[in-house]
Each structure stands twice: as C-alpha cells, then as structure tokens.
Image: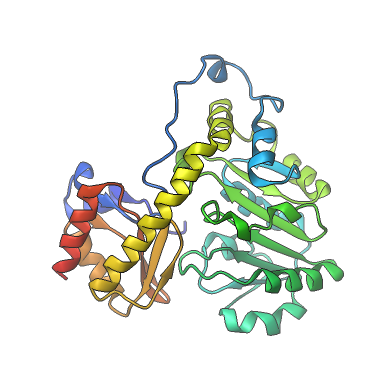
Length: 323
C-alpha cells in the first residue's frame, strides 16, 4: 500500500501522544468542513437512485453534465487504466503516487515539468494533477490545451486531476468535458472537507463514462453520501465564504513558514509545500510536539495543511519557533 497523509493513529502510537492532543496538518483537507445537517431516514433505508438530484447539483456546480459520480476520485484513478490499451503514460514527478501506481501495467514515465513538453509527442496518455500534489505546480491553461490537442489528434488522452481546484475554479477544464481525449477528475473531499464521504466525479466523453460505470457497478456512491454531496454542492454562500477564508489562511500559513526559515516552496489554497533537505528531521521534531505534517523523501520536503482554529495556529507557531 502507498503511504498517504492522515495516518494520525499510527503517529499517536509511535510518539506516545493521545489522538486528541494532535494538530493534524498531514492532509490537504479543509479543516472547517461543510456543516453536514441531519439526514432524512430514508436515505439510509433505500438504495441510491440516479434521480435524487446529485447529478444535477454536480453539473451546476462544476459546469458540465458529462459526469459520473464515483466513490471518491480514487475509484476512478484505479479503474481508468483498464479502460485503455497498454501504452505510454507520462506523469509529473513528483505527483500523487496513486496515479503512476494505478498505471503500472502501462509504460509509465514520471518526469519533471521541464521535460514533459519534449516527451508528450510520443505518449498515449498525459496525466497531470492541477494544482499538483504535493508541490502546487500549476501548468498554464494554453499549454494544457496544446498538449490535449496533440494527444487527441492521434487517439491519445489528457487526464487532469483537479482534486485541489475547487478554491480556484477559473482554471478548471471541466467545462470542456465531452471533448475527445479529455478526462477530468474532481473530488468533494478537499475543499468541502468531506473526505470520509468518499465522493468524486469523472467528466469525460459519454462512451468512457459508460465503460467506467460498467466497471464500477451499481450504487457506487451510497445514498447518504449522495444526499450530503448534493446539498453541499448547492450551498453557494458557504462556498464563497470558504474560498475567501482558505485563500487568506493559505497566505497566512505561507508567511508563517517563511518567517521560521521554511521558505522557497509553493502551495495551493489548501496546503503549503516546503522543499528542504532537513525534511525528515523537521517532521520528527514537529511530531514530537504533536504536530503532524506530510513527509516526502524524493524530493525531500514537507507539506503543511491548514490549521483549523486559533489554538492550532498558536501551537504550530510555537513548535516552529523551537526548531
């Protein structure tokens, strides 16, 4: 199994600190989640139905009706490679490790950003996370459009994982979904803070969506998760406030890290990335104080999620000052 953030219980056991005493910054999940209301009893008692309003709410929120709800974008990540003949796949290095792992039966090349343009002409699939996890890399829209045009012209495809893009929607490729050779993934786990609901969406051509639906089977998303997601996608007031708050908190986090000697990285509205050869030591020293970050070894760096409230901000600043 690949390692992910959010392994709080393992950290608590390793460092001998109770779960309740941790500040978990190891994920890029909104710490102030959409407030889930009580659910009607029938969503627990009935099989999920496609006319319950989820697809309509998702089409309105994301800007395209060419969609398939899935059990988190992870379900699509695992199912997509089997939908295409074995071929040459390019991903960014580093990136979300589940992507290259899922394509391991294809010929995968993980490349730095500067080498992708020269290599994409020989690829069948270009798979990018926008913005990238963990380093926040964001390719220009014009560049992506050019790469997609070249791939689609020879029967290839561009797959864009926009899991961290809900706070910066102008860059989304979802409105273009339906074009040949374009696949876009979205998730409610990060921006809405509802990772446990396990809901995501695939936007693509109808034929590919049908193939995925066949592979994933009926009731891929539970009834309660569908109900919660539909309501969250329709809550425009909460979304606007969350975007404003996340942008401000991300700037605050970036300045805090810079002030304590962790400079030179980048980030998104939901996390900050700081490359440093001392990443492992810093990760350990913060963990000894009950601050959990996400450690990366190649390249060496730390990803910091957003603190959720004033006490967590104060604890992070105090821990950083002791480094």
